[in-house]
Image 1: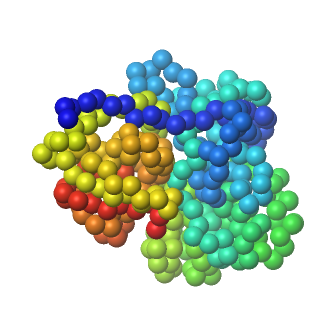
Image 2 (image 1 turned 180 degrees about the vertical axis):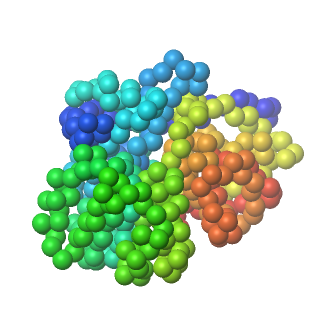
Length: 351
């Protein structure tokens, strides 16, 4: 068989904006519903995000990832909240242009910033617009879980508190289970390790989730480490602006008789497939080319949506911005960046 060039199909969905909620002067919540009548692609878990295509004449296009602030446990419509940032191409375009009735092109919800169990006791830290995935986890835990939830929410001032009224209502609805602690820079100053350590200490036995600006997350991670929270119970959501367009097709070379071909067995959604893996291609592209609906979002090694586990064999990663050393040692890889080393491999998405 001679070499052939194949273009994997990228599955995207159309989402119609049914409402725009002005949370603050700079933050808009978009309420979404499937525009094509197919809701299968819109199932999600608390803490996941949507990748949205941004209309652009830029080479390579433009896309941005926005966390879902809605809760699948409450059976509410999908919601993403976008906060305008200075020189933010995606956030400014959405805040300036998107209105009710607008149709957006999105990838299906993805991400690993998700609790293993909603029955845990939670310690949630949110900074600014980083509250969006934290809000999804908070509402889901209160609705379907049995544990206690404490959220520390940092903002510049009271006028920048997104979901202020909703948080007040939730606190009244779940007395004794929900405790929201507001940290305002205008009152308490910039969050620092010393000032937050005493606050976090009583909750060191809980599952901790952190999202916000980089310095804020670094500070909270240090705080939790100092009060004795084990690393496996500290969950951090890190985003970076996408450089390329994850919606764009990527051509891959397929030659089933090539001498350096590898073989991979992939388990996903309870089904197993055995595929030829041409050594020069990345795992995600091979799976998409075979018609396997593997999860992904950024395709740049920076979001963890395509994370899977190597059960047998070894790979190399072209780029990795999210997996820690411990993750790699446990076999976790990024399918969008993985190239094969071993002749035969076994990969699973189901653990």
